[in-house]
Image 1 (cartoon, rainbow, N blue to C red):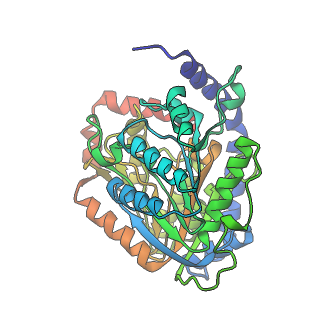
Image 2: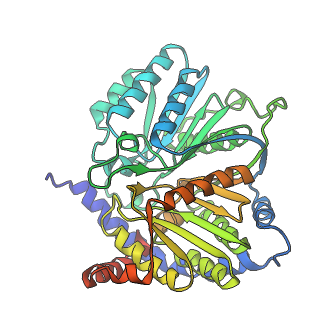
Image 3: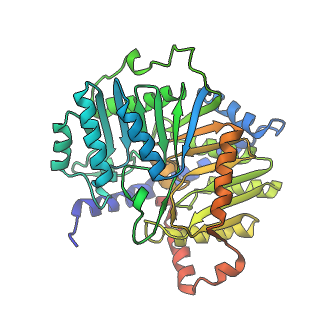
Length: 431
């Protein structure tokens, strides 16, 4: 195996820098708890979160249409079809484009759209590309540019690397003609359809949005694009729905964006507020379940109030030792009364939460330190019973491919595995 010195230097610096900021973040837990629980529960949980977001200056768009895309196949069929119909622009922002059959087909299609006069801009994260086992290399990027596609690497590594170690762009966003948007947990790769030999099928969740919520996704993309390129792409042509009163949707959606240094706490505060507002039931699916302390404390408070908490975690992962750390955390919450389900149908990479059958969230955010303390992330918080019910129905279906994580199941894990879980848990503040 070829030794990649840049990648190893990056990982060492990431660990060191994460350690230096951990103390500052630990002080926030108390403050977040106070902010999240100072409202007497006289409202329904969805109203409490809506009011919280409004107070934070986050628009609650009220005219959206939504479509859940519950597999890689569903996502790419829908995405490719809408790209074919694009008339003005296509904007893509991803953690990575894996250099495989799906990415090749995507860039071929985008190249055809350029020939039709459509503007195409694509942004991907430098480390996301580096961490990919099939990265886009210089020759691939040049071939894409030769098709007329503007493609840019976010925050490329430059010596001494230290300025690039912490804040990576983990979002997954597509905006087509300012009218249709996509976000969720999937990057661009064929394993979302074919799976991977070591983990089996890849289970994931994405969402298609139409309506004014697309304006928020467009804002996020253009801000990052202009930051990365020093361009000044703007104008009403990118926001055709802004003054369009004829579009009719009936879903209430808030787009919550995590911007390091600017809005570093909003995402985790919204999660905490959602959990603290819950009165009946919380369902969570998250692939790297090593939640930061404030999230764990919020879950424990919910359990203490008598709220039913169900958490689904994958039995396999694409990151070594993560399942061991997740099992360690899950066992702690199991002892407090949470129901833990271990998904055995492959790798469940979805990042979703449903609360009280009233509202839900779908997005790119893991509940770990990496997502909630360091990276750029985006989630759609959806205040709609129908969409929430659809996700909860999926959760119930996935239970059929899961094992309830009981005390007896935990005891089946070898002493070595339990030790690895304990040891890996020590490093979760930095991962």
